[in-house]
Every structure is written in C-alpha cells, then in structure tokens.
Figure (spheres, rainbow, N blue to C red):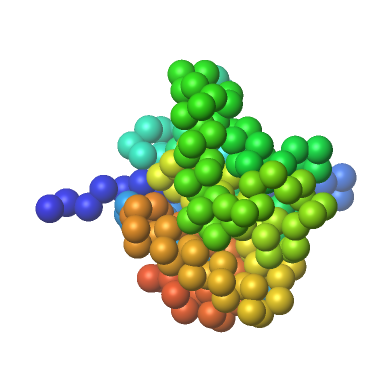
Length: 225
Ligand SMILES: Nc1ncnc2c1ncn2[C@@H]1O[C@H](COP(=O)(O)OP(=O)(O)O)[C@@H](O)[C@H]1O
Ligand SMILES: [Mg+2]
C-alpha cells in the first residue's frame, strides 16, 4: 500500500526583509510527511521553528517554494487558504489564546461555528465529547479565568481538534507548564495520534515529548537535519 502524504514542502524558503538586511530564515527546505506520522522539530531559540510552523499552518506564506496539504497545492493568493486552514489544520500555541468571556465549551465550539454546514447542537455534542476526552467534562461551563494553566491548555487542544483536522501543529505546547501537567498532555497527544491517526508536528524543547514522537528533526541554519 502506498502511503499518503498529508504534507509536502517543496524547496520553501522564507526571507524576512528588515531595514538593514535580508534574513534568510528558512533555506530551500523540503519535507514529506505521511498521514499518521508524529514528528518533533527541535532547534535552538531563534532557529526559525515558529517561522516554519507558521508556514506549514498557512499563517504566513513562503518567499519561494510550494506547500501541498492533503494533495492540494496551496496557492498564495488563493481564497481557499482560509478554508484549508479551518478544515484541515489544528494549531496549538505556547499560550492558549482562549477568549476570556466564553466558557470552555464555547471556546472549543468557536472554530466549528464558521463551518455553517454543521448545526449548533451537533457542534456542541462534539465539543462535549472532546471535553470528555481531555478529562474536563466537569469544567464545561467554566471561564478560562476559572481554570488552571494545564486545564486551559487542554481546552486549547480540544479547540484545535473540533473540526477533526488531519494535521495538528503544536508550537511548544507545554512551554508554560510544569513537568507533571506536561506529562498528562503528552499522553493526550499520543492518544490523539494513535486513536485517530491524526498527524502531529510539534516544535518542542521537551525531551519527553520528542521521545514519544516517531521522528525527530533538527532545524539548523534554515534546513532540517
Ligand atoms: N516578522 C519578522 N521579521 C523579521 N525577523 C523575524 C520575524 N519573525 C521572526 N524573525 C526572526 O527570525 C528568526 C527565527 O524566529 P522564530 O521562527 O521565531 O524562531 P524560533 O521559533 O526557533 O525561536 C529570529 O532571528 C527572529 O528574530
Ligand atoms: Mg518559537
């Protein structure tokens, strides 16, 4: 059986032009990721890990090269970028970015409400299932200010999963959490990856998290080793 690529980067580069110089952060980088893989990206601070993840997540566009997600080449001026991002990609950052005025349940539902083909009851049902998966069913109606750091981050993970994305991108997802809480979250990622074969690409400084991934890549001088 031939394996299916969920992501292909073909010779991408990213140059930030500043007043004084051009910073060539990503250099002619290519990468193939198969469906169901769990990849960790390591690298020194400032090596371009966030830049790379933002390119993969279609939050930023490369200076050169092409990005193919689930067989679809992403064209930079395409109006379909928002659709691909919303339907195929889930993103978790170091900071949770939950909306303070909404409950945990509502925060999880928000990305699905823009997909108007689904109805609200259905979305709520799925959000409640996700809350159960992350062990927070008894926190559904709590606002972020009423949750611990680890709980907030778990809600952010559930929010990233609400549209059942094929590709889950994590940028130092436990960078702000203690070891014990991080451990729980790592187990959750492993479960997500194994249970639903969702592809995970995580940037991390954590040895534990990189150890549960299938493949460790090092970003150094703009290329992946
Ligand atoms: N918008 C930008 N304009 C100019 N330089 C940037 C911009 N964003 C990031 N950089 C620079 O690119 C390099 C890589 O940044 P980043 O991807 O955030 O690294 P990492 O996530 O590995 O710490 C850094 O030197 C940073 O200063
Ligand atoms: Mg970073």
